[in-house]
Image 1: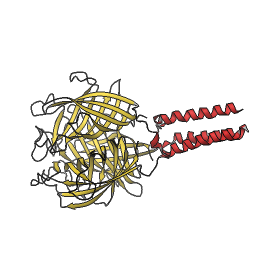
Image 2 (image 1 turned 90 degrees about the vertical axis):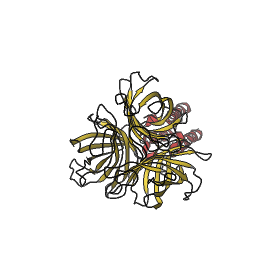
Image 3 (image 1 turned 180 degrees about the vertical axis):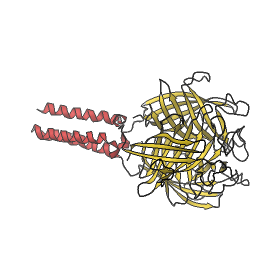
Image 4 (image 1 turned 30 degrees about the vertical axis):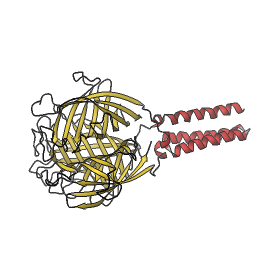
Length: 185
Length: 185
Length: 185
C-alpha cells in the first residue's frame, strides 16, 4: 500500500517542481480586471485656446506649432491633458484625466507613439495607470502596453486596446480605450 | 488508512491547483528593497549655462526656450541630467545621475509627466532604474511607476514616491525619491 | 507507516508554502526567448529628405532642427521610424520598424535616452515590443528595459542589450539589439 501513495506524492512533487521552474507557464491569459474609457483630444490651432486640451510642442524643420506638419505629421510632438469619460460624449462629466504626450513618427503613413497616464481621483477610482506603445492610427484596433500603476492600480500590468471612436479634421479626436489588466496584485 | 492520507493529498493538490490558477493572489505588498535618494534640477535660463543641469527643448506656440511658459508651463518639455545625492545637499558628492525628461501637461494647474532613468556606476550600485508616471507637482507626495531596471536592478519593478524637498522660483528644484521595489528577481 | 508518509506530505506542504510566500525567489535568470536585430537611423540634415528616417524635433536654445546641437547634442530630441533588419546590411529587406524617439541628455559626454517600439507585421513576427532606458552611447554594450509587448510578445518583459554597430558622422548610425525576454507568458 505504501507504494501507490508514494507514487502519488512523487507525481505531485514533480508537478510542482516543474511548475516552479517554469513560472511563465502558469500565467493566466484572461484579464483580472477590465475597464473601458473614452478620452477626448482638442489640439491647439492658434484660435481655440479656451477649448484646446493639447498643444504641439515639437515639430520638424518643415513644421510649426499651430498646425500639424506635412508628411503625415512626421516629427510632431503634442502634450495633452485630455478629459476621460465613461461614454463617448465629450460633454459628459470627466472621471479623470489622460496626461502625457504623443508624437507622429512615420513620414509615409499615419502612425503615432504614445506615452501617458490616466489620472483618477474620484470615489470610483484613485490612482494612476501608465501606458506606452506604438499607435498605428489607421488600424482599427491597436494594442499598447500598460506598464505600471499606482493607488487602486498598484503595480498592475496589462494591455490597452485603442480604437479611434471619432475625429474631426486635425483638431479633434476621441479614443476608446479598453484596458485589460493581466497582473492585478 | 489509505483514505485519510489520500484526502490530505487531494486537499494539498487542490490548494496548489487554485494558487497556480490565480498567481496574482500570492503577490507580496511589502517592498523587497527600499532606497531613498535626492536629485537636483537647475533649469537653463539663458544666464546659467555652467550650472544648468536641464534645458527647455520644447515649448508651445506662446513659449520660448529660456523661460517656462505661461499657463502653468503647459507644453514645456525639459531634458535633464541631474546629480543624485544621498542627502538633501546640492553640494554632496553625487552617487549617480537622473537622466531623461519632464513635461508640463496641464494649463490650469502645475502637473508634470516624467520619463527618466537613474544611472549608477559606483561600488555601491551599478545599473539603471527606469521610471515613468504622472507628477501632480503641488501634491505633497505622489507615486510613479518603476517599470524596469538593469544591472543590480535587473528586471526590478516597483513604486517611487516623489516629494518636492525644496525649490527656488522656476530655476531650481530638489526631489526626494523613495523607491520601493516589489519585484526584485 | 502513516507517520513517515505524513511527514513527507508535511515537508512538501512547507516547501510550497515557502515558495508561494516568496514568489521572487523562483524567478529564472535565463531568457525564455532571445532575438537579435539591427536597426538603422538616418538623421534629417536639411539635404537628405528622401533617405532620412529620423528628424530633430526638439533643440535647446543654442540649437536648431537641421544639425545636432553643441555641448554633446544636449537637449536634442529626435523622432524616428527606422528599418529593422536581421543582419547589419542597411539594404536588407526590413522585417519591421523601430519607432519612437531618442534624446541627448548630457552636456559633457554623449548619452541618450530612448523610448520606442519595435513593430512587426510579418509571417515571422506579429506584434510590438516596447523599450525605455538610458543609453550611454560611448559604452560598448548597454542595457535598457523591455517593459511590455503585444501580439506575439503579449505581456513580455526583459532586457535589451544595445551596441553601436556602425556610424557615419552625425547622420547615420546602426544599432545591434540583443533582446532577452525573461517573462514570456
